[in-house]
Structures are given as C-alpha cells and as structure tokens.
Length: 208
Image (tube, rainbow, N blue to C red; front, side, top):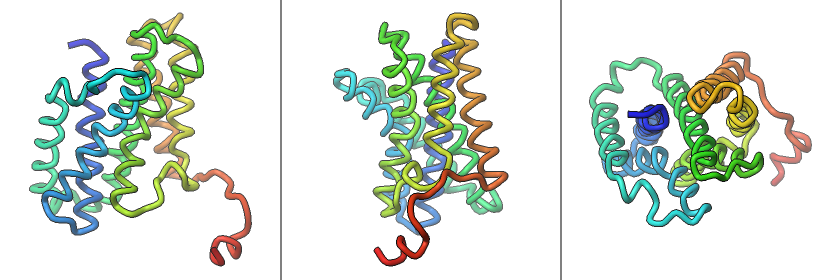
C-alpha cells in the first residue's frame, strides 16, 4: 500500500469516528449516526471527484472506504461510553482527518498532472473540509469552516506546504509535511482558543 492509500484510510477512520460522535451527541438513531459518519468520511472525496469530472466518484467505485466507515461507526457506538470526554476526542479525530484528507487531496492533483497552485490547494481544501460541511449541514449546524474556527485555514496552509515542498521532499515527504502542518495548526488553535476575526459587532449578530 502506498502513502496516499495510508493517508486515505487514516482520514476515513478519523472522519467516520468524528461524524459518528456528532451523531451520538445529537442522540440520533443508529441509521442517523451511520449517515453522519459516511457523509463526513467520504463526502469531501465525492465533492472533489465531481469537481474534476471523475465519475463515478472513487467512494462508489471502491467500497473499501465505505466498509471502513461502517466498521469505525460500529466500533465508536460500542466504545464511546469509555472514551471519556468525547467532545475533545471528536475534535482530535476531526483534526487528524482534516490533515490526512488535505494531504491526499492535494497530492492527487499532482498524480493527475493538475500541478498548479490554485488547483492543488482547492483539491486539498475541498477534500479536507467537504465532508465536515456536509456533516454539519445534516446536523443542522452552521458548518465549522464558516465559523470563527481556524479550520479551512489549517487545510489551506497544509496544501500550500505540500505544493512548495514537493520538489524538494518528493511525494511522500510533502504529504507528511502537509499532514503535520494541518494537524498542528488545527490543534494549536483549539488548545489556545485562537479564532479568525469576525466582521461586525456581537450585538449585530444577535439582532439577525
């Protein structure tokens, strides 16, 4: 198995766990939990494939990622009671998935000879944040990427790192760097409660 496949599996497990934990937190039934897990795990890849005209999407052609998501969901449902504060765990899983899928998506741009800066970044960011957007919309929340959270910015920084480091580090080294940059920025922003600035005053948002 190559590095790209490893990152895709890591991202699938992490995002499926994060999506399942959101469903459990919202007290959804088992089908609802599974749908949130699947949307989080494969949604970004489906959006990316549709963007570049790759149909049917990889998630439909190779069901291994769906199977991994289902197994992860089942494991999460049986073990969440022993996971302690699973809000924090959900955020850690989400950060790991964000880094893994950003690296996989950005590297795929090079694999398909789409080695342009904007396209590489867009494929990395869309793969990283797309599933989370779908998950949050299904859970009737404003997607995390649209709030003050440093989320898409972390993915963007990781994809940029991959693009500029790939000539020196090669495919594998650049993917590891992208993963590390994305996860570290995301976790540091959570640890120190760092946010992007919000336009307008708090009073204005409360009136809307």
